[in-house]
Length: 276
Image (cartoon, rainbow, N blue to C red):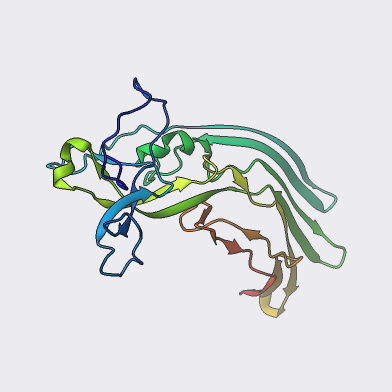
């Protein structure tokens, strides 16, 4: 039934369907008896009709029943990785460990409490890079003992960015089948769609991270020993911006707003240990 004219029309392409998801309903607007908008709050605009809302439609198959939520272990993930490691044992007062990792994590299973699969209209969009897919990682850890009794150490880390999704989220009304038109049943729920039709197809920028440490020991009278150390974290004061939520462990841009964090700047730490 055409909501604008009230006339019943026949499907012009009968058969099994075109394989596409419908978007005919979801957004409720009010019109007057002539089918024209009446400003929303005007007395003449009292007839509710459904309009498309860019989200695939849900239909109430039986207005006498609620939802059936199926719980199961149906999601899967695949992780492939290669690590090349170089270790230089301590010799002539210095040592180093370096590694390079290439990895790829795909699927739709990241966490036990995951909402993927709950909306049946987005199943084909959800399989892709996992939120922890860090394609490349390069790490170096090194320490050295200077002739002046100082111990110097440092770490250097370069990692490619994590993926994130572009989402559109809004309240969408479901629709009853024509058989139940007399009931006028509809239920509103919060729905989400992937704007690019693919989950985690965006990528954050890569970033370096440098940390250094300096340690000095002092021998005191009566067998006591004093150790002083200085740590500098994020030596280059890098403030890389990433679309990623550290609590949810995923990256999302929802309705044009990033759920993002910025790397904390350079920090210092002073330590002292006295042994007696």
